[in-house]
Length: 194
Image 1 (cartoon, rainbow, N blue to C red):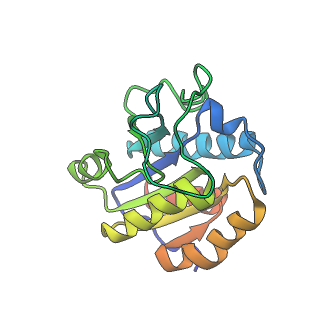
Image 2: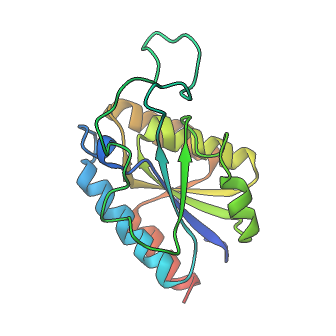
């Protein structure tokens, strides 16, 4: 279903647009495209005094706070280059924005995101970021379970694998909310939040 409406208190939630993730090869959209579209949305949300939440993933140097458990691909811990978890310049530096640091795929578990959104009266979130099938999808699932209306800006997100992105957009997201392009969301925002 295409995006139909935005609540009066809608927040933009940007997932993992940080130096070490944006630099990775992504498909179907490059990191620079995702950053540019997310920054355009952020500017529009800020202009209407709607919350912008910048979510970043980070771990202790020794990885002790990374998600435990056996997986076939290995754990999330380990040494990362200096500055890998710094939010990209195009989005950083706005004092009114909220920054959430997560240690999991999704932005809700183990963070204060839900409390911060509810205190601001937020009933809907628009999601962007990298990776579509991991951080974005996990956050969308939790937002849906927390009772938020969820909108996904499908051209302002990307994945390490184009098929994983397509699967999330076509099969998972329609069950969690509404999807639309950055342009469609900006047009709706202009109509409903003058």
